[in-house]
Length: 147
Image (cartoon, helix red, strand yellow):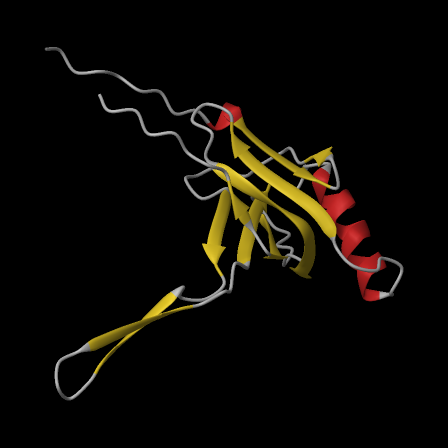
């Protein structure tokens, strides 16, 4: 039986913040990263060899968005960041990340921009890396189909 070919394309990845699309991503394999805030489980092995695994209720993630300097999303994110620091935004903003090709991704009802990017100004364009904290991240349910 011949093997199947699957296609991945970043063109299928949709990122929205406060229902507004984020566009103008930087190059590379890590333009959008979603990382758990902390380890979700910790194992303890006693002197007798029995083990206990403690699971955390921490569903928070850190999202990294790498944008081109020309991305219109930089102005949007900078505006949210400044307004939140000045107390003009109470709570957080909804965020959603989804690969429409395979359904991978997730969302959170509230997120906060924790770091504005460094800005390199020189001969070549440099990335603008935004860090976003999202509490209570909910991963999309993935459907597994045996090949």
